[in-house]
Length: 111
View (cartoon, helix red, strand yellow):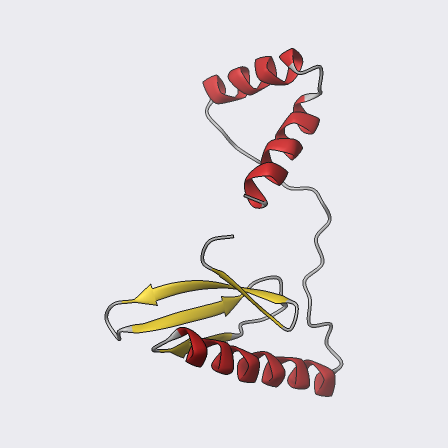
């Protein structure tokens, strides 16, 4: 995936902040904020490890589950014409709209 760094099995989205001329990483899928900054990739990985370790240690101290849980359900709002086109595409593939959308999301997320 583009702009994603994996540190100790946890994924962080990486962006560049031109105002401070540094890269910023933010872990996703955690029950709280754990971000980190560095001017280069090696430094970003090091700072990410420190940030993640501190976050996990704090969760352990407080007895908090560090990872978000995902139910597999969410509401998606699209324009009516997009909904119509998706329903046609799903039917053309012999799938329910839910199956078709889930497949499209899975394909896009793993690209």
